[in-house]
Length: 191
Image 1 (cartoon, one colour):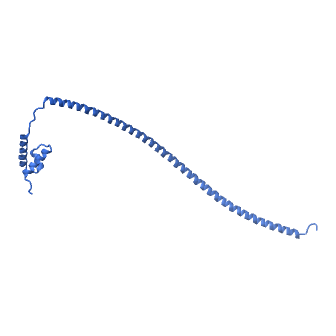
Image 2 (cartoon, rainbow, N blue to C red):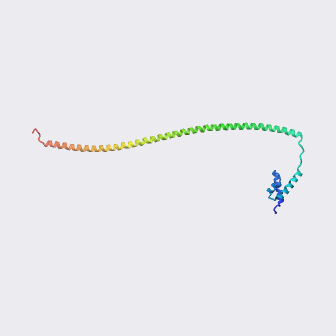
Image 3 (cartoon, rainbow, N blue to C red):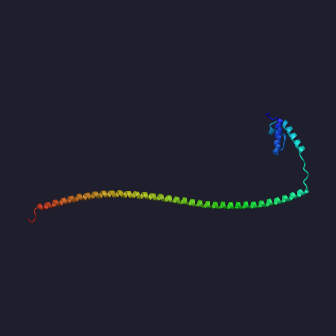
C-alpha cells in the first residue's frame, strides 16, 4: 500500500474540514494535512470553486410559509415561556424549601452546640468536684492512718500499762504476803 500523496492528504483534509462545518482555507488545510502551503492553497482554491459551482441558490421564502412559520414560532415561544415560568416557579419553591431546611439545620446545630458547651461546662464542674472529693478522700485517708497509728500506740501503751499494773499487783500481792507473814511472826502487842 502506497502512502497518499501531498495532494491526496490535502484533499482529505479539505473534505474533513467541510464535514466538520469548518471553512476550507489554505492555512487550515496545511495544518490538517501537514503539506506545503502551495499545495494547501491549490487544493483549498479548487475545493471552494467546486463548492461554489455546485451550490444551489434557494428561491425566496413564500409569504404563506413565512406567515405560517411566524404563527408556529409565536405558539412555540408562548408555550416555551409558560413552561419556563412554571419551571422557574418550581425551582424557586425548591430554593425556598432548601433555604428553610438550611435555616432549620443551622438552628439545630446552634442548639446542639449550646448543649455540647453546657455538657462541657458540666463536665468541667464535675471534674473539679471529683478533684475536691479526691483531695477530701486523701485527707480522710491520712487522718484515718494517723488515727490507726494513734490507736496502735494507745494499744501498745495500754498493754505496757496492763503489764506494769500486773507487775505492780504481783509486787503488791508479794508485799501483802510478806506483811502477813511478818504479822504472823511478829509478837503481838497483847502477848
